[in-house]
Amino acid sequence: MTTSYSHSAIQLYRLCPLRFKGHYIDCLEPLQPPSRHDLDFGAAWHAGVAWLRDGSTVDEARVKFTMAYPPSAYPNPLPSYRNSISGKSYSNGLNALQVYRDRWEDDDRHHEVLHVEERMTNNDGHTLKLDLITRDRRDGQVYGWDSKTTSSYLNGDYWQRYDPDSQVRFYTDHIKAKYGHCGGFYIDAARFYHYTKAYTPRTGPEKGVQKPAGDYVDFARMLFNPNEDCLQLERDNREYWIGRIEHDKTTGLWGYNDQACRQYGRECEYLKLCSAGYTFPRDEELVLSYYRQQCPRVLDAGRCQLGLDHAGECDPSVPVQDDYEIEPEVENAIR
Image (cartoon, rainbow, N blue to C red; front, side, top):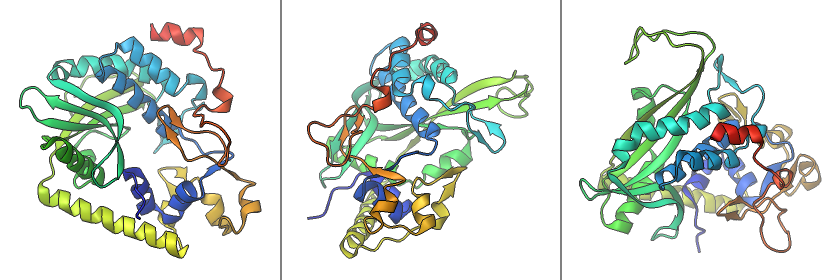
């Protein structure tokens, strides 16, 4: 019987089969993990926006954002990319939730929320988790949504990366099968950026208006509506990659993609293994000096943080954050 695979699992295999093996088969987590700032900030933004779209207040969404990625966990200084300081700061995230609500309030009132951050299984047994599913009261159609955070300009170069896109097609296909129709899939993008000095835009709606140094955020949405031929192509594509995964599991042979070892200034979490030529479990003693095996169970509150063969119930809490409380200055910022 073929194993069910999530969209993210297949995407990781496509990026690098050996990386997929380290994460999903061997369940290895680095003892000293690389910087996860972009991922953690994105997850916190997802959490905050989910609460907004589910009818919560901005203050409640800010609490959720804070708990998902506490300010004490942010790197200091923030990462720099292409000689530009990241705009994904804690204060910018808090401010952006209010700006997001103001920016989209009129449009969002037309969308009836059906599901928020709900894990589902489609008719083929594949798991998926959509950020949001809504029904537009104006046309009665059901729409899927995915929140994205980026430092890129929200222009044509940014949007073209989603056409074609396996995630858009996979989720659209699921919604169409579940509800009988789908009006399309929204990419709900937030651009977080920072100016180290005053800047005067040469194009766009703020052309010629000087902007002082500091953090900024922009928002844009784009609707994609793949046709039935595109959806069938995605079904065939998924079966192809699942077949590749099953073949590698059967043979025990996993290739690696050296083009994915370092991307966007970040190293793959399994770079130490590839650099040294280690494989697991053959070199178990050496591997476990850099990694630990972690339970693969994903719970509603996050992935289990316990060891692979732990006894008792799974626990998603990170040990160093078990007694975490919101600090007074954070509460003041939220208010």
